Every structure is written in structure tokens, then in C-alpha cells.
Length: 84
Image 1 (tube, rainbow, N blue to C red):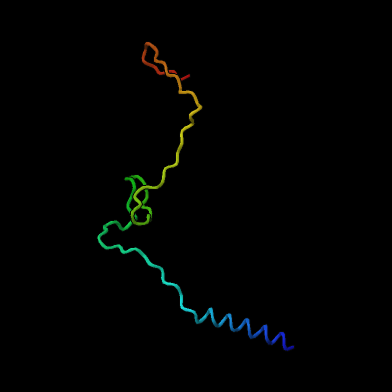
Image 2 (image 1 turned 90 degrees about the horizontal axis):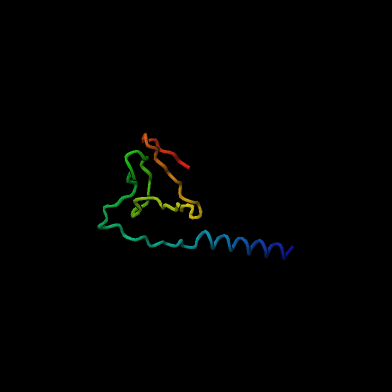
């Protein structure tokens, strides 16, 4: 019974420490001198995204398929395009 009281006291002491302990204050960079508040529309036909300050366009990670042969396009004499 004495051991369970010691464990209970230890757990309550640790909980009290975490409750009383001061929290960390994170240093945020100052936003003085910046007119960029984020949320700029990135195109006329695109919605206004809530972008963080300093980011004006989303990251474009499109990579073309380099192993794909280029399409061959022919033009007939009457001006019609033929794709092959």
C-alpha cells in the first residue's frame, strides 16, 4: 500500500509540474515593412486561396514524360491537320 501511495504522489507531482510550468514562447518574425498579407488570387479564373505571406503561387511539380515521342503532325493540301 505504501508503494501505491508513492506512485500516486509521483504522478501527481509530475502533473502539477506540467500544469505550473511556463509555456515556451515562440519567436515569430516581424511582419513590419511587408505589404504581402497572403491570400492573393493567382489567376482571374482561379479562386482566392489563403496563401501564407511570401507565397504567391503554388508549387508546380509537373514533370513531362521525357520518354514519350513527340506527336507527328501532318497538314494535308486542303489544310486539315492529321495527328499520328
